[in-house]
Length: 239
Image: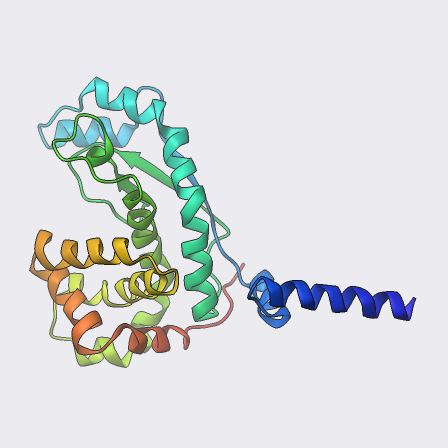
């Protein structure tokens, strides 16, 4: 029996080396909590879309509602293909549990920015009615961005870098660590095209706050400095 156990351990370790991941890392990986993400949208649109459209005096097109519902499985598949790898890369690098085991992300076509809490993702620019549709590979990255806001909140009160930039507006401060994780993941996964797209997006297509936050992360401090701070977060979350 002892020889059998030794043989099994040998093959397990060999398999880990072949796949480029040590046995120690695989064991650690299995104990770090990562969330399962479920996308949701209702057949006739969500109450959020209906209320938001009325409040903003921009009625939601029924065609857009129908398309989102019909493509819900497609969006879920896009996330399931890339999203878990994004999460695994970020969370394993930091070594801190994600605070939830599961999350629901509600899709919307209301002319309203995506947000992390509640988790709402604006997908109008992925629909056929969009003037300049975004590439489908951008969807997992955009969802990952919002999820990382939830992941990084525990660092806010202990971050020396947030104190260093305390005079900046909250939008800038709240994006520093989440943007650092975006850059970390895209670099680690060699997603060069997506990183170039994201760099241009933050520098040239968004407002001053996003540009400033990205400059701090990419040009001034370096994303690694923010990752180092994230590793100081509490290692486990309360059940």
